Image (cartoon, rainbow, N blue to C red; front, side, top):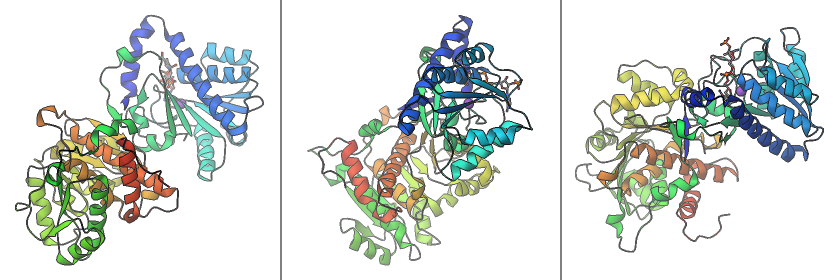
Length: 510
Ligand SMILES: NC(=O)C1=CN([C@@H]2O[C@H](COP(=O)(O)OP(=O)(O)OC[C@H]3O[C@@H](n4cnc5c(N)ncnc54)[C@H](OP(=O)(O)O)[C@@H]3O)[C@@H](O)[C@H]2O)[C@@H](O)CC1
Ligand SMILES: [K+]
């Protein structure tokens, strides 16, 4: 599991070490990590470091210092290095070390910004050391033009490798917000701890691959502000039956989804839940939808009863419910049942305060806008996309439920503040039906969860929601290898991943 800390917490952790006079040592550790990661990527791209054109953008602070020391090491390996100073001063010792290795130094001004941007476009690599954790607000002045030029090239799949030093300059290390412009990276080499701002919102989209360099802050860091589950963390969260199990003991999932208008949502949620692994799915909904479900998934048990009459361990309610009054009532009843429940899509509109953490709301930014408005909070879709951590946490706090906010990085926020961020998904998953499959996967994890009440930590359901997002994202990424993702066809990938992650012998997945 990756633990993330705000930039503020990392700076606090550095303070005692700086007081001991170890700032220079920390900077050398950081710079070496940045150099090594950049060298790896450069070597992979062009075979060797010797002769590579490297531009380092260096601001006035320690972030620029790290970047200049790293570039000095690349110069020692034979790279042709140019430092573009984005401020009238630069870290003096690092600049001297860079010069000593033959690095060329240019000062960025309004009048040469366009020319230097053009030159940076032609480099093999750009190291971004403009702003780190000491930055506030987005990039300003001529460096903004430089960043916009490089960002535009990236959109076309062109331009140099961009390596961010600690974080993409312009990204808020605490929140991931970008005020105006940041410089988007292929790789972010971050120091001491992964910054929370790299896991959410525009910061997550700008960071590219993240590598963390240990500079010895561990004992000083305190409690993380966010987490990201990795594959190995999922094993304990996925359902594996024991020889003593039978269908009811494994966990029964109730699904109240779909309507005459949107039958597909029910089929996809059911298929995904079965592929994740449950003892049984009990489906409640219109007869016509039930017949379709039984054709596609004969193992599902279908009926038209009420939530109160249906014995299950967890619910999925809302996907494709549309205006179907019976389905809406079932969603409200599921929320009030005291059982864990995934409340998705149309059912989110009925959410009120006073829920419990086992209820997982799964809005996208647009649905969260409406939900927050109904709770008396005004936040536009753009506000939420700019600072998703804040609004996911706020919605969890106001409702008492867990909130899974879907997006480029999907966030799971517990009402007690624990937060997970998962970014396994491929943009190909941004398609109708994706939410329905995610709801089915999460429903299966809730229904088969065996954690005793006494061992459930705060944030337990946020962790399960994050696990579902991980599984869903990776299933989508696997499917995308063969072309555009069709959520109704994700079941083989989900099954294969569950087998793989729980360590069961399996046939090789094609
Ligand atoms: N501490 C340590 O031991 C270690 C730290 N490490 C490294 O140091 C980094 C933090 O360094 P830092 O504190 O010097 O801040 P950094 O981000 O480089 O620059 C801030 C300067 O920029 C300016 N400025 C602010 N916003 C701006 C804007 N929008 N546009 C333009 N300018 C702006 C601001 O000036 P001001 O506005 O305050 O006058 C200030 O002078 C950290 O990310 C990591 O890389 C590692 O080496 C490990 C050891
Ligand atoms: K930076």
